Image (cartoon, rainbow, N blue to C red; front, side):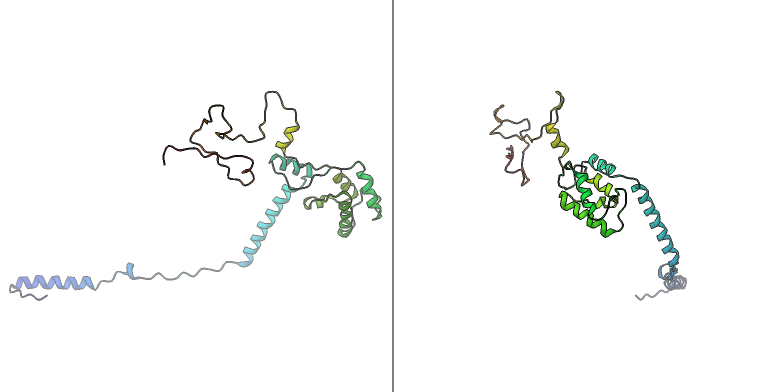
Length: 228
């Protein structure tokens, strides 16, 4: 833009404004244009970190050993039973002559002392394999470390294994007169439940059977709605 100013005083004011504008335009703001220097990360001591990690692993292993030490098979079974968990194992009923059969299998290994521990892993494997074929019942992997002698083997094969669910076992128990357990589901269907004219207490609720296992056993019912 070009302008002609005749008043000398006005020229002085204009020159002052121009100088001030040029000065402001040439100012640099260091806080906006400055690039922060890269801070080099110091490399940590590798040996110190590895020693610390090893110490932490040893502490965790010591805690696990303290928890599992002294825990017997009965305690593990009781813990599983209290949680309602049934392992997929086959039922087993011990015969009357368990000890006689185990001793006959032990004679093949020249084992006469019931308290004597197995000399090596191969001997233990051969003996337990023979017991498995004789009784049709194998020692679980979780209990192999507890079988260390012939006496432990006899004690293991004298324990029955019951795979009946606790709820199923209640069917054969004499319950009190004020207690009744409904083992089968009760589902409403207007064609079969005709006591109140096929009407349900929950007229807007449907009983839809979605499981493939129970579709043929229970009939589903879709409730009618008053809106489309």
